[in-house]
Amino acid sequence: MLGECWDNDLIFDGMVEAELMPDIRRLAGQNEVVEKNTYSAFENTGLLERLVEIGVKEVIVTGVMTNLCCETTAREAFVKGFQVFFSTDATASSDLELHEATLKNLAYRFAYLVDCDRLQDGLFERVGMEVLTCIS
Image (cartoon, rainbow, N blue to C red; front, side):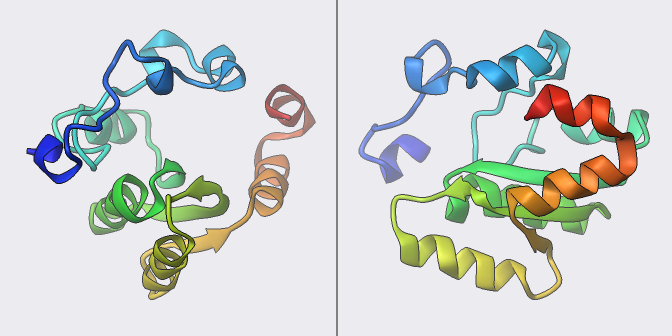
């Protein structure tokens, strides 16, 4: 169905465009990567169950496209009871207006809008310097 919307210009597993950035791949063990085939990271992925199982209460949303996958995932996380932090500068869209519209929508209490510096400061306060060194 998504192929119809995007004139079959989709990214599939195995394509270069679908590969994780090297720094993220290094930090994420194979078991921590959730593969999805629709806009939501929660739809038929086991993500919700895994987050509940390990006691996660907060999620950080990053990625592309801001107005599609990122916004859908952020809204679903909010509805499922998570505190959502949405990165303003680690999300992107093909159109700046769409990116900014999503940020305005999510600011209506769906998510806390934060930039990478704020995210890093928050991680530093919670887990200490050794983790920040790994992700910087």
